[in-house]
Image 1 (tube, rainbow, N blue to C red):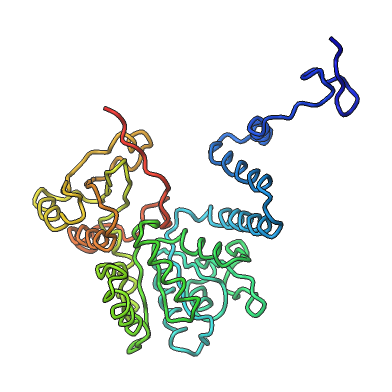
Image 2 (spheres, rainbow, N blue to C red):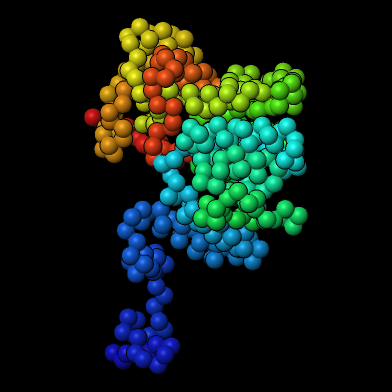
Length: 383
């Protein structure tokens, strides 16, 4: 049988037809990963490459490709910037870009940031003027982080951020992702449409379980009415019309006191450490083990969100042991109904009251900063 030739004129040993055999895209992806030396998280990198190839083959418009490419590039830059700071607790401060340094709101934001920085928390803002500048100024250059948005009228970052702790964004959605993903506490001061958008998105993420439980404080100047007016609107137009659960009001706290706002963030991890789903079971890790009386009382008080199973004490479950996931901590478990995150926040508050103030660390667990959930639940292993 005669041997064909390839497009280059050389014989095509693979087919003998003179037409080069098309390479299987999945095989090509594997070769690219091999050449790039990708070993860690190879399955996730493969998914990213596969998704990019789908864009190429789905007749995606040039504009859509630009959006996708820019978004991935922006997230990559942000992940790289935040990576060395992963174990340091962070608070994101939202608020008006229009506040002048002489305004009471500016002074309030600066004082809040200074208070949190003094407790070892880094302060994340949108890097612009107004409340953002106040937050970074109060934190100081060593503790300030900025996620700047490129706007024609507000493009220069404020001067309170070191270059290595600043990232630039083209899109609001990638900027909001990074402002919310990396922090374990949030302070929201009065602001315009952008601030309200950030506040509602943050509340939506926690309300729906797309983000981990986190303290959210809506802060006003002494005697101010901004957030109380907002709360009246929500009560009259949202809760009253059954458009949200009134218990979701537990997801936030309104105050005009710097120390109250700071304590809301600092006390959130007094006893509560973290949670993890294993199949249908939600495991809550605690710094201090509750007594039998505590378990009985809390199980009865929160029976409405436990799918009828109550709350019980547990040892680390097999997936936790397999990943060495905080095996030293006490644990309780429940089948959380996943529909009432306002009640879950109330449960966390109740667990924190089991420990007197000052008897536990007031910072989030090292290495677990950030509010976004880790993704899909892990199935319970078969016995």
